Length: 461
Image 1 (cartoon, rainbow, N blue to C red):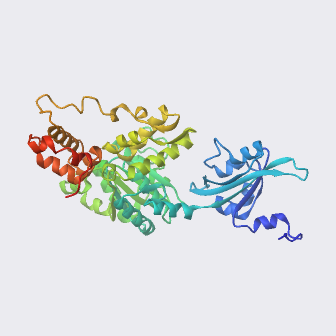
Image 2 (image 1 turned 90 degrees about the vertical axis):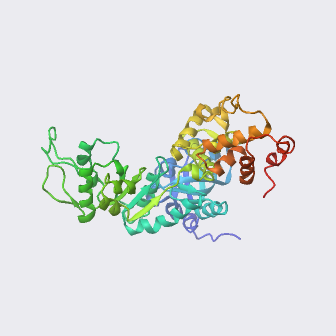
Image 3 (image 1 turned 180 degrees about the vertical axis):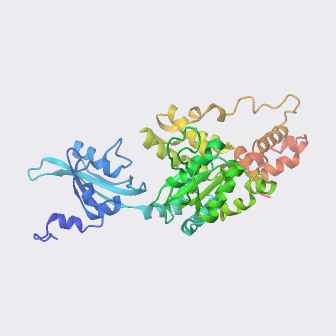
């Protein structure tokens, strides 16, 4: 059916639900419809005249521009899934199609691209795969998913939150999510590591100081509370806060005011406080090492993040997520991890938690320019030493003894965690139990019939 001739082309483009924009051969945006502005998070007038990569910051902009390829090769592109980054920092998954733009004589004068927001489809796909996402947090773990369910109402409440967990479990990631989901999202997010600043300087760092408050204080200086006004102040490693400062922080929480160091001027504390620690703050409060009243003020809402070793189902998901991000940052084309390397990653205990896994993959990216990451690309400490599987000379070298010794060693490495040992040995929980119950002693059954069941992964019971 022919389009009515009296309707201008631009009005038709403006009526579409898909984003549409055009560029000239220098990639300067010449047209940007309303839907494009809604998806990209800016007014169309703000996009006109700018380079397209300055507006979208997409996952293709730095290395494989879709429009550039279409203009260069006189080709079209259909339904390619990428993501763009809005001015507020939010990543939006989109599906794009692109083609060269021609003038009346057929000469290529630029390019045209359409794109649609596929956030709902992306979210549905992840949910069907058992993946839960919120902000930059991804998980398949049931306990972590429960925390994600609680984040939005806690964020909206404005309550003080205490985040508990080992180093590297993602406490700051949760703190940023709480800020971004709160009514204070438009305000600043200011983080302070209380363990990284000497105690004698921490008071000035938090509350600021007046001129002449101490030697060399030649000018007035704002503290982190002032910098976080209207937003969120994240106090990481709160367990390291000296007792005198705990008293001052308690006053801020109770009265919502503070005084800069060396000043008698009272300043309103228009901040929401989030705190985190890798220490047992409740035990410290019971022993007097941390003020009990401050502990209860800080933990109106309490979120305890499990260590990575207790949520191994998240390891493949996190590996895929980090590889996707590192490909963009390093401009590489690593497509995944080989099965033998993934088995090594699944067997590791991760004392450094998610941060350690991220560091491992950053190291692997140094050695692996493309393709799949293999064991040879992983740090040396992850690869099992040839001597670690060798039994002591005093151990009887029967199959039963070997299996028993391997089972005991795996349990020791995983601090008695049965499921982690099972994953390392590639056996079922019942099989591991039977190996341990039989013990290392040699019997006719152990010599003749003890191998098939374990080799097959167990027959139940």
